[in-house]
Image 1: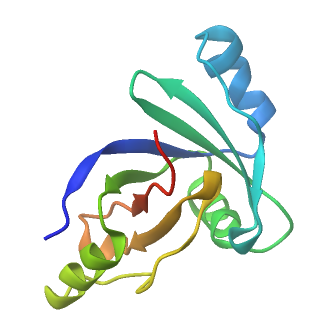
Image 2 (image 1 turned 90 degrees about the vertical axis):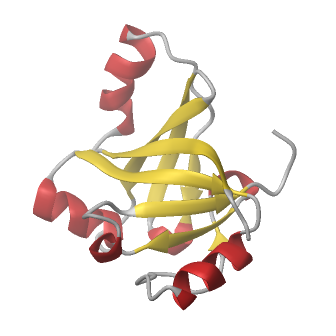
Length: 138
């Protein structure tokens, strides 16, 4: 069975990445990576290193998308926890066989050349869980 390797990142929803980085980048001195848009999710992302894990800052692009709905309902804050897995397809099959509600039944492209899939919060104690398989050497 595929296994979880580590916490890859914690996703933080924000109206403005620039404002969030005033605290996390400028204030706390976290190293920040370049900005990237994920068109399928209508978001702009920036990562900040925290030891071996990262924060992923998520800013909405456009009027519609999952992040926009999240911000309207809940406001800025923790959006999801991302677990890195060694074989995403196998992990999704395993979770599906257990009856876990999945948002994505197949891996799809994510930020930084990764493949991702989401587990619905209804099946994960109210937490949106992103599963990621790295497509390059760490």
